[in-house]
Image 1 (cartoon, rainbow, N blue to C red):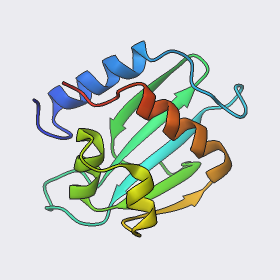
Image 2: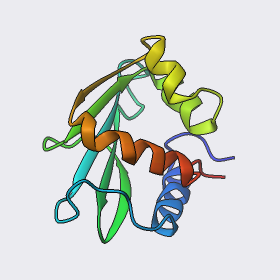
Image 3: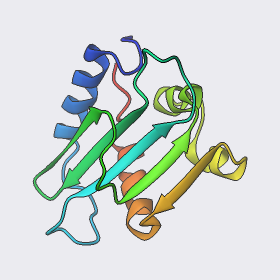
Length: 122
């Protein structure tokens, strides 16, 4: 398995997103940007991951986006655990391990879609 956020991991994630089909967008005419912002981690590791979801497809890229519609703040270790499936988002939220700000109404169906797409790269 490729290391979390490595070039190989990102390529596999983007292949999975490409094959996932249309996302359940509240407004299909707009791009929804979701940023996962890591609250810790080494200085040489990425501090964020941005998902851009639109009616024509979805992509992920290392880094943040100033026009994010929603931001999820969590530790680097919890982000990695979420992608590996060893931590589920409902438990993490309940335990206060992640904080959400922004358009939660649009975010909820997207998180379910991301989870269902088996977005964890192999």
